[in-house]
Amino acid sequence: MNVFFYDKSFEGLLSAVFDAYARKKFPDLLLEKGDVPPLLVEYSHEVVTCPEKTERVWSGLRKKLPKLVLTQLTYAWLSETAGSDEVIFRYIRKAFDKPHCIATDFNDEDVLSLKKLTQKVSKEVQYLAMFIRFQRMADGIYFAPVAPVYNVLPLATGHLVDRFSDQRWIVYDEGRKYGYYYNQKTVMEMALDDESSLQNGRLREDLMAGDEKLFQDLWKRYFKTLTIKERMNRKLQRQHMPQRYWKYITEKQ
Image 1 (cartoon, rainbow, N blue to C red):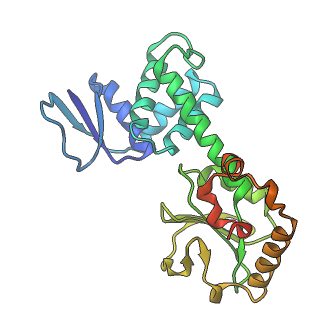
Image 2: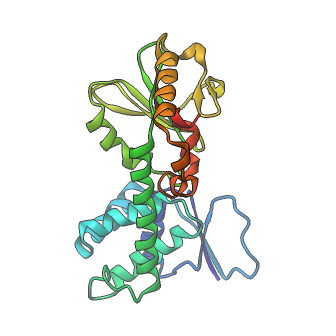
Image 3: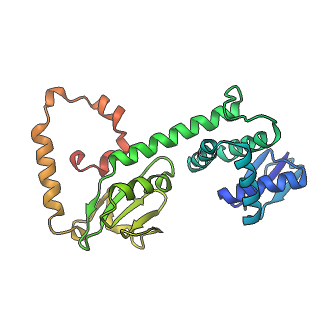
């Protein structure tokens, strides 16, 4: 068995592709540096992430694959699904080795797997865009905690900038402990120094703007007034609005 160790970054994965072709040794298993290798390893290699290697592989892929497929590779990586890096590695190898474009060869297991991963991540981006809810902080910044299944914040920021370009906002992924801050000019990655400011997906009331709690209460009363209990369908709600988003939605509190 051939094993490659790398830093579990997308750039590291592309560097692993470069090393595999340079050494004419292709991994059966990709592990993170420091992981315990399996028994009976025939060949192992520790990949050093290198921008030059990354660029050469990516440049080669641009010549072999449509732009849409390059986007799919990125989406599949952000799925963070177990084994997705190996799917991507095999897909890239086939893209280089085969004389024709493999993008529509859905009889190939890796091509089909990449498409399915892309669809799942795309759906999560849509959910995030639909169900994100901002709360106004005392300093005027709008804050929205989220907990998406996949690492979709990098894919959603463009939509949020277009939609809320006149506001300062923070979108924060509670599970992955990072977020993005928009200052009406640029988007910057950030992390919270103190996560005690969040309580069950909501800002502490002492951090909210003076009228934020009032507006939330008014919205909940409005929503409750319009609700027809006899027509409530929890199953349909969960189908169209994943329950993992409910704790962030004011009217569901």
